[in-house]
Length: 332
Image 1 (cartoon, one colour):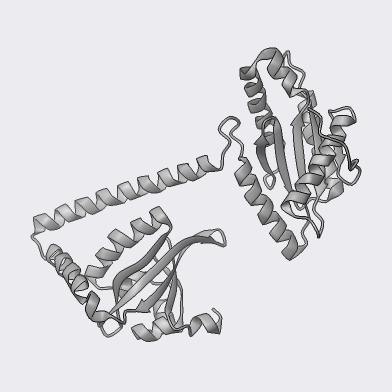
Image 2 (cartoon, rainbow, N blue to C red):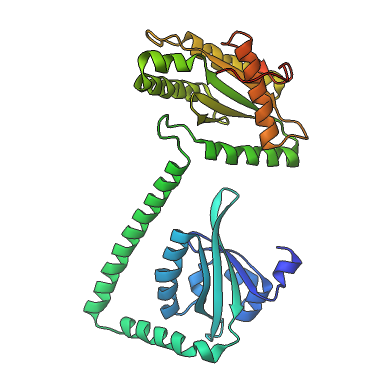
């Protein structure tokens, strides 16, 4: 943690989804009266009273899982000498290094009196709940278990919605939105590490004739079967997506010009030699390899121009942008 964040005029901590503290700045450590090694690796709820644990667990976690952030939550932490410190808590859930984390900022409340009644009323009600009879406590435990089940169901639904948002429903491949996000990520990685990658644009030859002759249901079947074939041929590091219509795109990580042409030929030949029944299916492919001046738009345009060269050159072939003609209009 850099010195500016460590000594910032507000508290900061980062926790895993499980609540384990991953980092905490000196400002918050001083406020709570702990040394760094006393809190790192412990659960954040170890800094809370029983009442605030329940408040934190039943409000903060569900809200941030559902909406991805919590703004200005009135809350209290407990210091090492068991004193309550009322604060405003802001949190945001994000992915870092492939793992989900929750980053939080803590600001000590200056207008303490204005919020004291609300905080004390909430604490009193929660304390009364904890002091209820054994029967009430058992009911609370049952409700808590029921809540956890529903929370897991909600997380599962959210995961399913996220998958649906990035998936092409017809083919099962990733969709254009997902592809564009991955393109931006690949470009950023290239700018940072100079690790080249290439882009393929794949288009079914004479697809309009298939739709016109056999009907759109057959055309949809061809699209689905081709998607499965492209996915089966792809490497684990490739990103295969449907761009739109009969056009597919493939991001080839760590792949220079020659490798891109070789891999594109493998895709093309697998399609040409596949058993399509009574339909004759081939694809034309345009390839482009990233260069220092490329943007998302320019790299796609180069691959698209190379695709045009493959189309005008007779179809069922691969052309790299370095070899492609730079003018002409795209064939129908």
